[in-house]
Amino acid sequence: MASVATLGLIAWPVMSYFEIPPFTDKGDPVSYGQAGGGEGGKGGDAKTLMPTGPQAQFKNAKTLSDGTHVSVVTLDGKKSGFKGKVWVWAPKEYTDDPKFASSGFPVMIALPGGPGNDSNYWAFGEFGPDKLSLEKSVSKWYQEGKSKPFLLAMPILNPGPDDKGIYWDASDIPGQQKMGTWLTEDVPDLMKANFRTIKSRDGWSYMGSSTGGFASLKSVLKHPDKFKAAIANGPDIVPDSPLWRGHEKEKAENNPEVLAKQLAATKGPDVYIAFQYGSKENAKMIADVKKFTATYGKAPVHTKTWEIPGGTHNGATYLKNMEDPMKWISDQMEGPTPSS
Image (cartoon, rainbow, N blue to C red; front, side, top):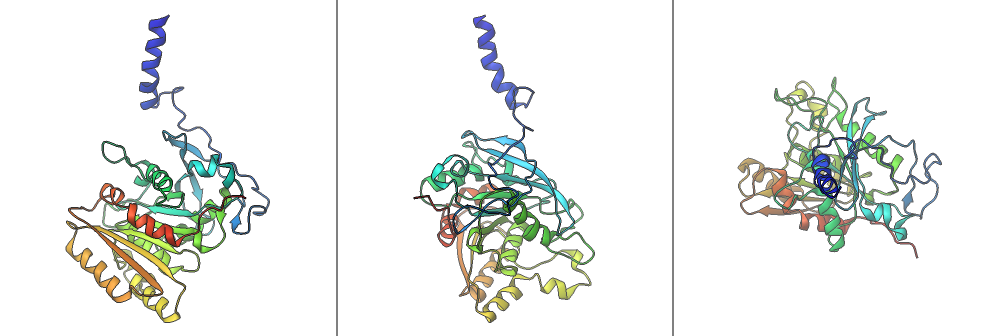
């Protein structure tokens, strides 16, 4: 019997690693304690929007060592008409800390680079021998006083693969899927429906890399009434999808340079953009970021830039060095308010 028990102890982590039922909780329903759902968001403190419902059917995609879950749902976007996957994560402070039980939490919408279709590497990326991940990093930085305890929403970025050089610039390009509305309306609505969030824009931000960095930068500048801050890692600065051909007016309406100029002309509201790139990245991209910050990096568009010595164009490089940008962004954001 002892040998059987020993074999079981060995087999469990192996079975779990390879996700062999019943040794895994992947696919299990996940609930985030949606008190107040279906009640029109009533309850909570003055800064908090309680979950408005309806409750999404989240399924567990990954369980972290602290017991928190990255879960996934296929969201049928009511405003964009687009249907796609969104992964979400809540820190232990959200689910387990009684002093925050009635408080809203800030949301960070984290966007990948690359195809960004049917996957999002921030949800699953574990970088390096220490298996660094965005979720674990947010928890660590919060414990160290360097970050707000963000709720993470990690949607797909494009409705299809970009294997033919086709991508959607996180925008509502005429005749195409409305990916701008998906990212700035439907995904936030999912978070409001299922989590205690912060009513004002002070609780809403973006983070992304490459094309996702462009999407983060553009979304905040285009909707400063809804979102306050972004971290743009190795981003494109201007829209350049071939799908814009013949739609120059709409392309300009999604150009961060144009949007920053308009925001300055109207004198606000203030937005905060942290840029991060590696010293070994594309020289034109680096020059474009420097030009943008030099031209537009003054109130109401507040910018700060970090160059990563020896850094290259990849999520691992950005995440390993994101502590300072995250602290700078967090300093501008509203956090959960502990009950007295």
